[in-house]
Length: 82
Image 1 (cartoon, rainbow, N blue to C red):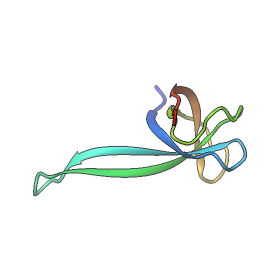
Image 2 (image 1 turned 120 degrees about the vertical axis):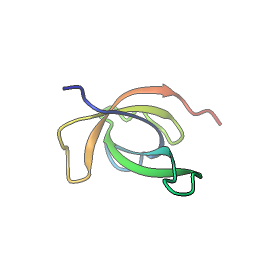
Image 3 (image 1 turned 90 degrees about the vertical axis):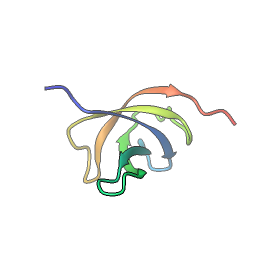
């Protein structure tokens, strides 16, 4: 069975070996048809601390590291430059 993958933007990298990633999902309201955006935040394991806020990253599902951490950083897709 294939593991789930998500693409999102790093919101925080302050916890040790952990990043918080915001993932946006677009969907259409079932009755009114308006396009809505839902944002969900995931905590992911970042062993080498190679992410900073604003980076675009690819997450992969993994066995739980802790109560809230069930994702692992697979790859940094784009580095945020100010």
